[in-house]
Length: 173
Image (cartoon, helix red, strand yellow):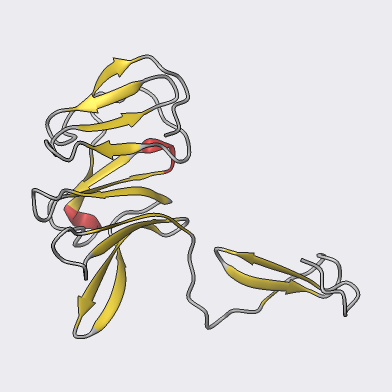
């Protein structure tokens, strides 16, 4: 956005903070060095513990928010760009998330660290959109759906393996 009071001054707000240019965008200076910010694609809250939340963060992976000694802290449990997240309401500790182009991550420990999470993509034959859908059946939480650039996939075993259930290209929701 241009500053009408100063010729050449421009501001940009993004997931990296606020930056300013004094020369019509030739050079930039970060204005929010002490500001912690991120772009969040999605969040999910544990159904029985409102102090436990997970989120998908642009450039900052999949993260979990926990209340520790009165402080809330975000901790990363996957790499890449975190997109969609799910908490299994019937199986305490099981969470899912996906990153850009649909790679799916599962954790049995509420995302307690990157080393306790693993990729669950067996049977998925293509990649998906940047923001690939990931949906859980709330009655039978071992059933999940996702979509690639060519098809819709379903798992009935908690994402251990996937099978194609429909040929619908470019599903986004």
